[in-house]
Length: 193
Image (cartoon, rainbow, N blue to C red; front, side, top):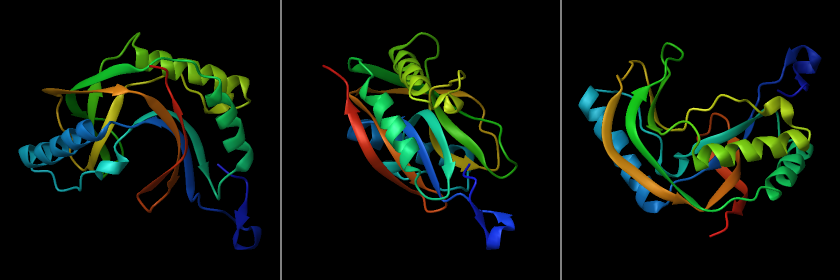
């Protein structure tokens, strides 16, 4: 979080911007995931709103919440990402469940394979580059590959769903405008064929 203050220096400023690296589904997978989010809602009588198609993603690394965009962090992140060398790969997701969270905001997610996968290796390599670029505080080891479908008050039990797969051909640095449900891609990096 930023150290900037508001209200004449009396209260910490409220973050307005989030930075993270992500992988986005291709158009066909994105549509399938959006339909699944609607279906799960109907199936479980959920009242929340599914995430918009353009916001569906897999977060690789969360780089923090800030008041304004921190140019130095963006520069470090871009330098790290430019050093990643990986080939395109397929991901597949075949389970839905909720993560326990705040009382009224539990993420209902689409889950994929864990363990030593190409997605995990991409994330690991990016994490190493972020550490080398001076952003080690933002790198965590824990990673559960998932796409958030919606936020709900109730927990959706784990269930199998028809697999949704796509080929990951790039990853992106994303600027999220907090509270505005808007993501802006600052830059993306292609994976080799």
